[in-house]
Length: 321
Ligand code: TXA
Ligand code: MG
Image (cartoon, rainbow, N blue to C red):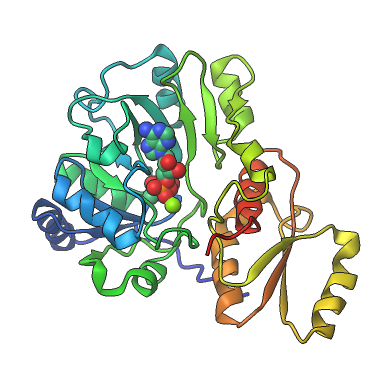
């Protein structure tokens, strides 16, 4: 499958950034490149602007947003307590694809945290995200820039295709280098908990924490049919298969007049990090190609494999109509 492999720009012209900053200050939404996926950004301290994010995404208002901050900026005001372990994790993984859940400070409005007393904070490494955050000066609240429940965008074109006129401007930072959403660790409780696996792996986090990181029971929900709504899903039905069943499954689908794409995410042919980078592009491509099904082979849960398993298992999950 052809992937645009242009090396991403490391900065945008000052006037383009100034324009995006002006839009944010006026309470409008801006599409923002990050190393993980594109975000739909708004001024985190403007409640009308963040309300617009939920409206455009079609997302329930109790689903909290991540606040993005410039590298080196102070967390004061955004969080009201910084556990030692957060300092250690920030030193090791920021800027980068790690989000930390921390006790909320007054600058993190309830409109952003979904009414919770904790806030998700991330310092992205994408140079254009950093350029924008520095110029803006405040926090940018941003979920992935897709409609609720669908596949996250990894190029500026994906954002425009999904959100069209609903987003005032999309900064083009090229294709995302990580390709799947950030790792989320909850540090607001007695023990750190992995809420969403990502390319900062459980193993890497465990090294810094000095103990094995626990995962959230959310993982168990995935296995309880009917409990979760499908996330990260293309229109085509995603089905998890074993390699040895593949030929028979393809043949059965063909016999029913159905078209199937195969997504080999096993990690046997390419690294799991390469698979993550092109994962959403491939799911989107299956829809563009008019596929009825995507048959996927999962990797092991080592490193980024755990995150790939998570996203694909959810994509294959039961769908709420
Ligand atoms: O890589 C990423 O994290 C991307 C880029 C744009 O930064 N953003 C992203 O946002 O994936 P979103 O909104 O699609 O996912 C944010 C996740 C949601 O699952 C939300 O429930 C969780 O973060 N979250 C946010 N605040 C939280 C909180 N206070 N407690 C628990 N979970 C929280
Ligand atoms: Mg999302």
